[in-house]
Length: 189
Image (cartoon, rainbow, N blue to C red; front, side, top):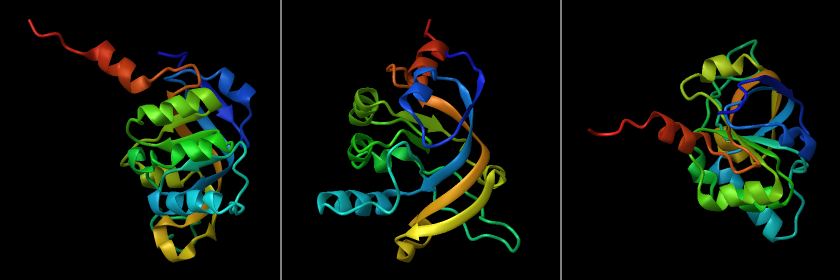
């Protein structure tokens, strides 16, 4: 199940960065990532359909499926745990085709998303659900850049240092969830 190496990634991510990643690899992401959930994804795809520019450069970008809580005084962000990713599955292939290179969330992805990741060289990372307060410690700054009226679901630009994630789907067709289930399945006697 991958080398379990601790690798560092710095967005914008290049295809060469993704070549070395295998399912199960632990990564630390340092640089700029964006938050967006389903309402924001719907608007991003609508903008593409209308021939409009996106509010950030999607080429090499990483989107974190999260809707953070309000920041306490003196902190850039509140708790920022991952959202269940399948809610973005109807929108993700379009963004991947436009150059998205990384997605962070929790839960398995649809076959359409996995196919788009393999075809267009994009990786899906898992973040630990329930650890939003700990994950927030890696966020050094946060600002709303689009769809402010969506509140927690607005698109935010986060500057992160050592944001922890695990490779769930790699560009080689590996799927950590499928492999894990197969590896740890208890056969009935």
